[in-house]
Image 1 (cartoon, one colour):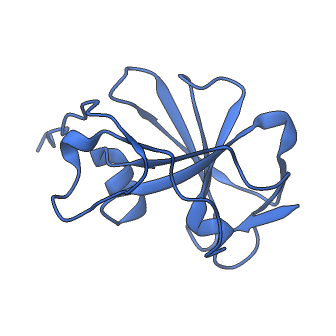
Image 2 (cartoon, rainbow, N blue to C red):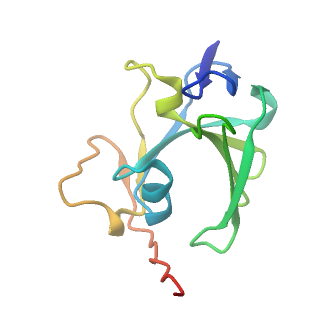
Length: 138
């Protein structure tokens, strides 16, 4: 078993082991969600994940038009997991919340059209799926 958790430890997940599907996402929404140039998620069947502790949910519309439900700790604010309409029955877990430097690397790198030029994900399948910046309505 592997654990993923938020910074304060109030929200945690118990996972069955390393994931076979680890994805680096360079979409603008993941960049904003993580505060980093890309996000990395490990995907698991929802039935294999045990969630402990409260979470707040933030729902956004993805570039695909489907909804993504991000779950974060109501105390420290760490995003620990998410569920996307385009991956029913799966839970994406933030690899940083697993905090294991030996965790498997991404096998896919997606939304590379918004990838920072200095980022390189070696050994992954690369996809140029598009992410369109949302304009603020001020």
